[in-house]
Length: 104
Image 1 (cartoon, rainbow, N blue to C red):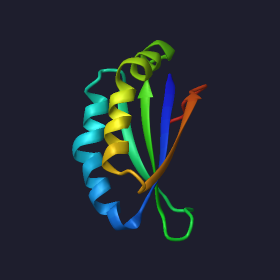
Image 2: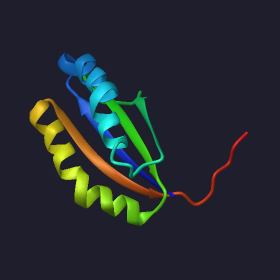
Image 3: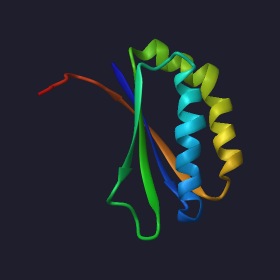
Image 4: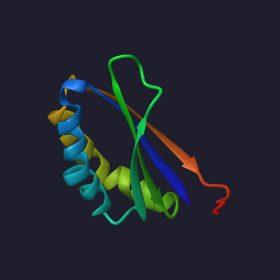
């Protein structure tokens, strides 16, 4: 399993609209690619003063599915986000291999 994490710091002036758009459009579009098993969005509370920072995590079954997403789907989806929120956000992506899961 691989976690694909996108950390986004968004301008507070568009923060609520961005969060609504992520919930109703962007994340559903990413999930519709069929490359991911689940996703979640979380607020990061240790952000820089004046910013709103979120983590969007997508879980995929393996490297092949992640590569498919990155090569086939990500460029258009990322462009859509960049065009819509140009100058209003900073983002970085992290890829994590799940070693083991622990559940209560």
